[in-house]
Length: 204
Image (cartoon, rainbow, N blue to C red):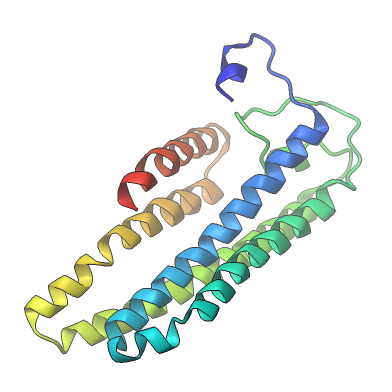
């Protein structure tokens, strides 16, 4: 990507564009489910500490991680299965620094409005479901720590701060990106990319 910024003519093959879309949706889908898994881990650790080792066994942890990657893979392949069958015969320029599904769909030689709604619904179902599960998990945590002492509550909440920060960094820009027009979409995508790549290593 850095080398591409320095070139005067920035080109990418169709296969490379499809690989970018597959990789972005695989990682994003897996990350969302993994955030839910981490929230569940915090819920068990705070709300059921005596049963933690039994509930979060090695087999359970491996199963949850495999589930996150499976959901990400199925989500990415469902997007790819539709895009690779589109007829492309017109303009070939994308006003973005990476291949994004809404921008690629606009290049198809057909009416893509219904298809765009379908693709957004697919992504929206995954995102909204994960976000609701996150809210439920942290609601239970907050209700539990309210019943304990202030010192215990502050210690419990301090363990969740980094995770909540990552959730905000991940979901808030996604909300703005999905509701913003062209140039704002590009700007927020770039900011989201920088945030996720630079801040997450320090948080974890």
